[in-house]
Image 1 (cartoon, rainbow, N blue to C red):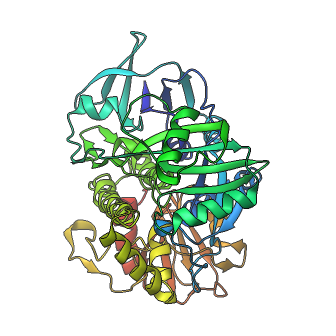
Image 2 (tube, rainbow, N blue to C red; image 1 turned 180 degrees about the horizontal axis):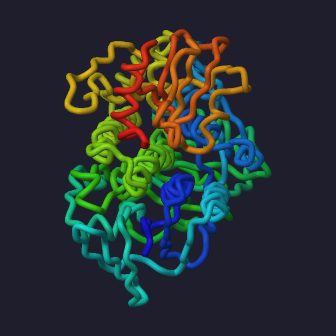
Length: 484
């Protein structure tokens, strides 16, 4: 019997499997594709995702295969510089081929002990009070305590679970790819600049070696994969020329469907990543949103399996992540409106472009796209034994803490095992009976403007204070009863 079965071994599923294995949870990952993704689409890892990779000691390895780019120009592709004052040691974008990031995360999960079966998917399941019986497409049945659907926008798990997926269907489609062209760069640049004066939807930028990254509105709506001829037709429609495109490294089409699952959990079955939310790729947030789902869910589900989770801990997964996804859906809706060629949206775009000259506006939008603005609602935390709730007033509570300097180097290096952390500048407090799941560092030199903080395994601040009873109440809230 497995503790958790995960449907889907994309970035979300692989990262969730790795997070669970940090706590010795028995994990089976099912991937319907027999081979890894072959098309070389470049994806971007935003600041918060980079921070999470740094916490688990993965950043150096991923960076070897990625290109560092400025953290700028994300919102509706409005070209503005990197804003001043971004609150992160990792204020940049990592561009990396999608097959590479999937391979690296999959290898990480396997190295930690996750079992991955390719060419196998969920065909059905039933759940009871003790677990989930999962029927596989090859007819085998496996028993697990929990099932997590990380199986994409057309999620079988979500469909079988009967969870509603309300939102808007696609009204238009866009082609995206990396294509070769015969035209000289200066001719391409001049023509694209002229088109973009009136229609910002066309993107045609160099990727190196005579290859260009192309984003262009599709002509009509079709379900099959695009061809180079589809790109020629679309380019002729918007630019009056096909810009000499011929061969392609990769091509895809996407719609502007925007949907959010009504629930992220029913009983012992949960959803994460694109199985829980879909939206257009404006701002490049999709993969990042899924990775961050996995980091939020992993330690909580592990706590449930290991038997020390507080009663409502697993419920906080939906309570925290559902509003974040709703915000992402809204900002992608806004970005799509700003990409319209209609006079009204173009007037709003010109206004916003001028407003983004104010650093505060530019920073606000970049922090939203890169998810470093996320604050979970930790304002109240019940104490053990039904004691009155403790109210947290600090603005930092619920937010992620940046990678500050500590006497052992950097804060994130202390989070590699996926445990909680008491960072104590007072040198008077202790993790006590929670030391089997929470580490303690007494460091009066830590670059922290607070006496003591309690960090969850995902790096979010659960408590700030200087008294042991207050710390104990919050350790109980997030990490359950102390060990005997």
